[in-house]
Image (cartoon, rainbow, N blue to C red; front, side, top):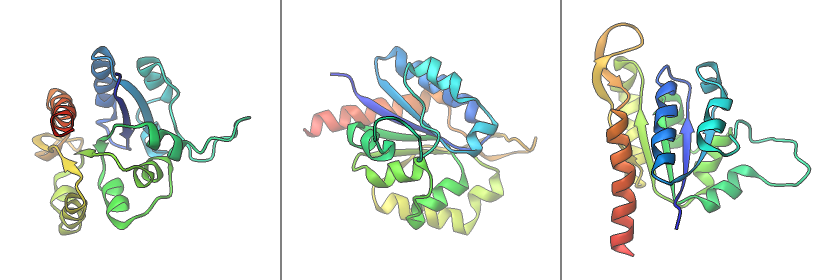
Length: 184
């Protein structure tokens, strides 16, 4: 049975790595629905994800269609896992605060499946006490975090904040499904 993954992509320079994640997951026979924040579309085009996932990409909570389908609810109900990679300080803060004002935050709030978050941001943003508090809040409710790693950042500096290696993210996804099937 095919597992359904929602991949949330947020406004980070690391958004291009989400395309690699989609491609690798698709090659492993996962069904991927990409949900992009508005700011992520400044870094990568939805057509890239539509082509790689072979699914419609959700970019807005208010989509005018002939058939009523509140995407954030319908895709949340069919999902087996939500992965947010890259995850900015902004999305982490919104989720920790219960803000559901776009397609991605609304989808996470409407779901009851495991969530894996892979942060990517500048080191000072990641180490900020506010970001660390927000991460703790999300961990308390069961969300899992992978990374970030130390490396070259968008600013050109080296520090903690680089998106975890794509292979580590893929492995975390596979392990999540293995753990879930062993507990069923």
